[in-house]
Image 1 (cartoon, rainbow, N blue to C red):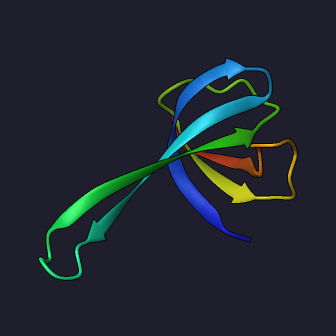
Image 2 (spheres, rainbow, N blue to C red):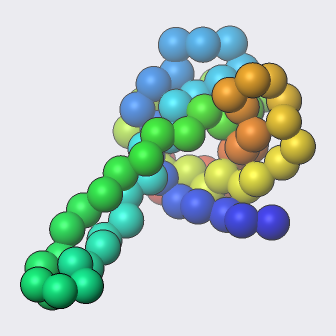
Image 3 (cartoon, helix red, strand yellow):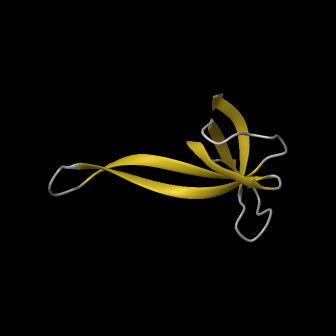
Length: 76
């Protein structure tokens, strides 16, 4: 099971949070390091706040766009 660490950027939906995962990527030719980010919809039963850092894990599809679940809060 894949796990990722990201920051909650939206908690306006019921039982769903939007998590922004940033990764550092190095260009193969020029060697410049760049940031890339991806947004994931993650299922949670808890009331989490924006700005919290969480660990999400891959699960079976819960809905059309939701295939991740919040496993734990890393940093408040």
